[in-house]
Picture (tube, rainbow over the protein chains, first blue to last red):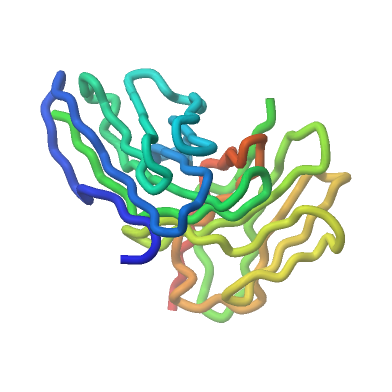
Length: 113
Length: 112
């Protein structure tokens, strides 16, 4: 499918488990982003990547790990899930840097029990 | 550090009435400003953006926004709301490396 996809769309996991959220884009966009959306906070940036093998922390990176070995993929891993990481996670991509439109995936709703 | 404030958490508007959503930002230079819309259960879609030039920006779905430097505002407007405009709206300011700083969002409810 063309565009940006996320998997799984819904996930329930237990506290302490490792979980990986997948993000795939077909445009060969250089920039990719991970956000979490929580009521009253809007979207907060977790990690971003300017190119393959270039990643950096955003506003709320603690407890998360990312990698980007290929331009089209940008997985987000929760190393040891906590209840506070229950959220909706959005992946986004943009062709270039500052000022460019970001294209968002449909989101992954993660529940940590 | 820059910030984005959307003072209205929730707005109810009648179908056919006008809509204005407020956005205030804190940023040292002329910012890149965006409005995104999120329909229920969906990702975000860009409505419009402002970088420079004409301070009145036209977007998709009949929306427009006006940049006012003196008020540090970038308010979104639509002259006549349709039921399909019920959604959550986010204002955002662009940072370096393509990052976006989002406001907390305004939920718009449209009544018949």
